[in-house]
Length: 247
Picture 1 (cartoon, helix red, strand yellow):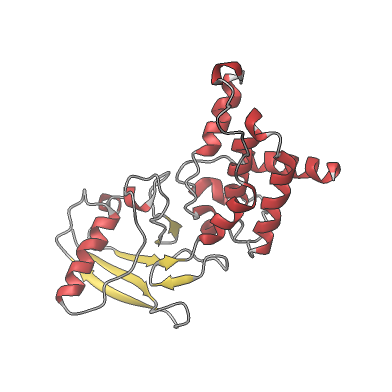
Picture 2: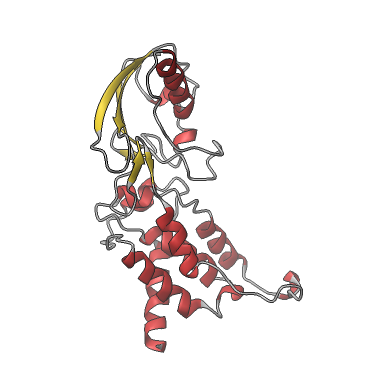
């Protein structure tokens, strides 16, 4: 297969970016999108050109690092996958593919397709944790949790923090990410003691970092590679309101 790749190039955070088009051929249909970019970079290096910078780590769909905006969609045209799980057979032979970094005021571009996503880390530091007495943990079998509740918590915990929800949202909202983290803990007894402080602190940090407001378009849910439900946003809102009433 062969493709024309229209890729965003930006030397650094302060430089003005632009698109450059590259032609690449001999790509196997079963190659992943990141493998295709590796081949492109080998070609660019042979030609004495600067390779394209992009984030990646696990290449197994569990780290969230491979955040690319491809042909107008976060992670590309396939559903419920990260970029590293996107295969070239999903594109037509000879197609022109537009590749951009995630666009959000809270995710500034570092170089080319790499964006700064430490804003998520700061939100987690604000409240995405529990405090426990180490060395004296209660036996798990003594903590009774209904199966359906445990499943909902595990579903929320599936969030990998890739930022697709932010890149997809017209407002650049991080509500689905924050809701998944809050919901995962709010549903379990271990997370209840700090529930009020957690909801207020994480929402406040989200607002401080410049993320937009949620207007319930559900675009985040549609593009989330792990299929996180917007029902968790409703739970976050309930937790936040309860925290406000409690002071």
